[in-house]
Length: 377
Length: 165
Image (cartoon, rainbow over all chains, first blue to last red; front, side):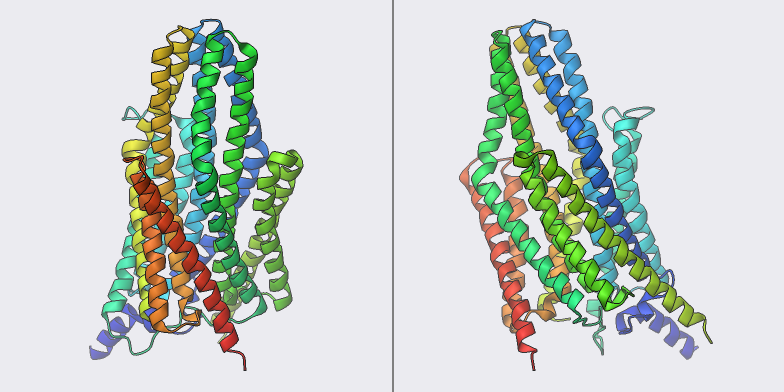
């Protein structure tokens, strides 16, 4: 009986007191689920973002500009019914764009959170089964939310019991709720760990001083710092003036069209399109450079799980950091260089995706190696 | 667990949960209505313009601009709260590699946490008050984050140098 209690007690705090890397990376353990799930979510989110940028974003922006031109013509012709119809079409295009951007951002953010939760698992003071369930709940929520968000545009309010929220939104919100509950439970597990006196501090991850780990850590910190500095510059110098210009151009479009001055109204539509592009590339550059910095730092921490030769780990590190610089820089250049810069930016995104796939393959090799070692007598 | 690490990881998780709960509440109770209002007021502005009712058109456009600004700020606050929470968590995991005394690390961790709370808070308050105070809160928050992050980068470098034989 005493031995059984000891085993149960040991099981409850097993991960918290374990300092073995392989112990926490057992088959179907929370840590393994979260590391593999996290990298997979980030990779899928980036592939989705690249496809969206290449095939939907630009044609969508052109269509919105075309519809705004049609609006100004309808205003000049006193045709209020057509104005409303064109705005309905613009609304649908904006919803299509907005839900895709939301899904892209949320998949990647959930990937980051999954990796972070994987790394703090040794501090989460629950038994292995509970930790595994929490990881599964988190990943289910992390998939449901972006899938639901993408479907919002296609499902709309069909069969919805509510007047403003459709089934796809309900699924997305339920996914968000699962993620919140899983995170709250993980926080509870850490607080439980902190309340107990631990004889030995568990190692969260080995103190990896390899070249790839150091390069990812330093590169990631620099990227995040660059992103913050750029964000502060954008907010301080451009944000308020661009917002004021947004309303000013819409007013100009409206009054010129109403006065029958179609060439000035068209010019206002073109200026408005250029303004939207300027805002979009600035925000995209700011968000991507910080996200890639976080990716690099998180990948630095999981390098011990990437079972590749140091040569290949270096290659993937260089590819990832190169892509992390190329994408935001050339996204920002799109205003001057147009599609050429857009193509180079997409290539940067592709480099990041390839590096992530390379490292994911390394993690999968690590799990195979470990499983084989466990099977061996 | 050392104090600075504990502070960063716990505040990171609390901030992430708060940011997600804020986002969920916003998505269920505010976002759809806000988007409908935004689209409706912009459409109405141009409909009034087509009817040659410019005072009403301008009023609808003002309503659109106000709603849009609030929407952008609320989404910004949500995304920044979660993004900054993840930064706190990452740094929390790595904080034992910052080559400063624990006293300095606590100071840095506190300053980072304060900045990560203040910046999105200032952005949110901008929806209620268009004065300089919310902007100042956001500026102080972002300055604290940038300065602390630069100090952390120096700390990483210092730790590497101090480990050299």
